[in-house]
Image (cartoon, rainbow, N blue to C red; front, side, top):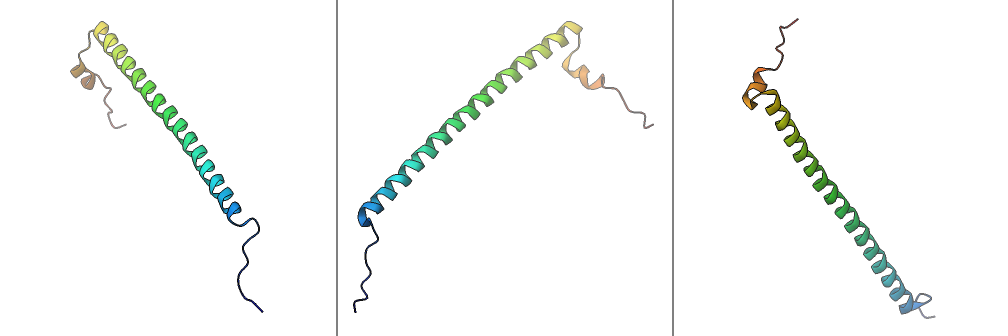
Length: 82
């Protein structure tokens, strides 16, 4: 009797197919990850722009109201501990 292992059905071709499948899957995952990364970066940039616009609007409102930036801390209501 021979105890030599027999190659799996499909042999090397099966291995090549599996390798191609894994490579394709990894490429798809990398593409999706890149899309998600780009979307997140775009949202962060958008939020940064919106924050800048908000800061400008607040500064304009403070200027119209005649409030200096240092006065804001003094204008906060004080708690009397009740």
